[in-house]
Image 1 (tube, rainbow, N blue to C red):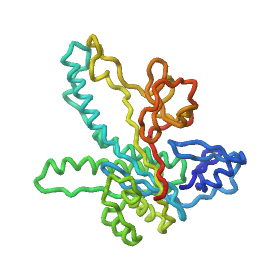
Image 2: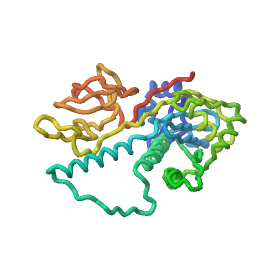
Image 3: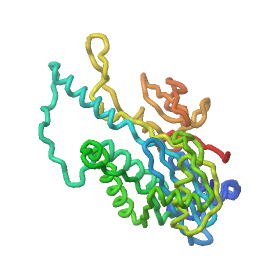
Amino acid sequence: MRVPVKTKDKLALMPTSPVRARMLISMSLATPYFVKGIFCIRLNREPSARTVQSVAVGIDPGSKKEGFSVLCDHHTLINLQIDAVCHVKDALETKRNMRRSRRNRNTPCRKPRFKTTRRVGWLPPSTRARWESKINVVKTLMKIYPITNIVCEDVSAKTRPGKRNWNKNFSPIEVGKNWFYGQLESLGLTVETKKGFETAELRKILDLKKSKDKMSDKWDAHCVDSFVLATVALQQIPKIDESMVLVKPLQFHRRQLHALQPAKGGIRRPYGSTRSLGLRRGSIVKHPKYGICLVGGTSKGRISLNNIETGSRLCQNAKIESVHFLSFNNWNFKHCPTR
């Protein structure tokens, strides 16, 4: 895995090796920093050259897990295996039930909306959340790599004559992917798509095999396809690096009406926020006892800290003065070395 490099005016250059990055930092020629948990360096002087190679991203969409690979002419820059956003549909159902129960109680509430006009290009919230998370990943990668090309596997489903419900369930996929491609092109990227059978043929040419275990945390589960797709834009095969970063998007409760269950006296406390004592939740901080961790919730003037890999809670009583802010973040991530 290569270390991303940026200039003082925030221009992304070609990444460098970890050894050279450490040398630049030790000589005070570069400053280390994090972007969503990815270690990067910023040059403190003018670079010797600003020329960059072609950098392509391969995307392998999936229903549960997705693969992203960033390649240049000779190196694999980074592999990401990301958990797909699947919680939105259940969250909307919970919101709907809370609103209905609120109308049955003597509680101020808005009137029911029996007629909802949908705009042209409207997407269901669950579909939009899935494809928008991919856009956010690409935007994050564009901040640290000079990306020019995107190659994505084109997901599709066969329609069945007379099966109205079957065809209706797959229509958001078609609408969502077309919206996704349009958003990528608006970022100034060249977008190319490949069908699933074309990806399989490319794997055979490169003599690569794909695992049948879709939920596996191995390179050959999803990143093998994203690697193959990225080679299409480069038209050459760089060195394969099977190290990965496993990413799980954090789930925030922004504007929930109140807690689902009432406390004593029938009072329901407010629930939902994205800030804890001035810090954005999910941010990467450094604590003298727990090391690098994530900011969680808050209670009684203290904040909770969570493990950066698993998201499990480390403590609930950390003082705000004892943590040092490092970076904004909305991912749980785990680095997996080459196997």
